[in-house]
Length: 251
Image (tube, helix red, strand yellow):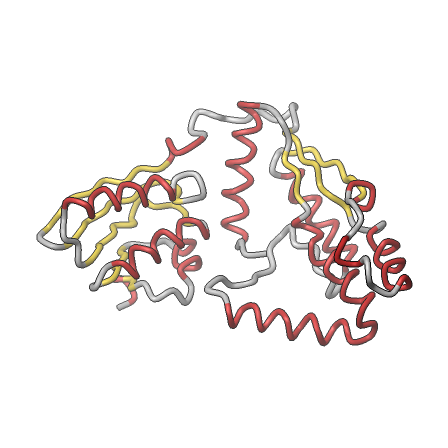
């Protein structure tokens, strides 16, 4: 998983508002993806599974600009799996959702990649998949959901030009819904102005998701003078992590 708990909270709130307004449901395998991975790896490598999982985790983190983190709905195969599962399910219901678990094995076609594999391995994978579930999540109708700020209405970006510097005042949530809007505005401003650096006032910015971080990194890499952010709250600083974006408060 690549979402911190603060990102997860914001994502769930956004999904709940969208479902409450438009209907439908949220289908995800994310909470149990590590269990699926273990089933497949264990079938091939047996007792070497734990060592391989640790090694692959560090390899991914070394090659990616994103960090693999444990969050509340990650059902880790390490530690107490049942307790992890209980915590994940309780989190979903606490966010105003209802949860139905659908057996993964009943809704997956045959793995073509396993056509030439040892039949014993294939049989072990199919047996293991019986313990993995897809989560079908719907809004709990007994919970009132405020949809007044669904979408990008909860985000705003005020821009001004000071010489070759772009000044931004961001407010609300810079997330999956609003990040494309910020990027489009930035690219439009760049068409008419020679921007060398970007200064962002974050005093009213509540949250940045991984999608928002990607947009900030695009601006960072696009400008010779980079991006400087000021008055960031703890959640925003946490998301920035090791990104090469200057935080004025910490300089």
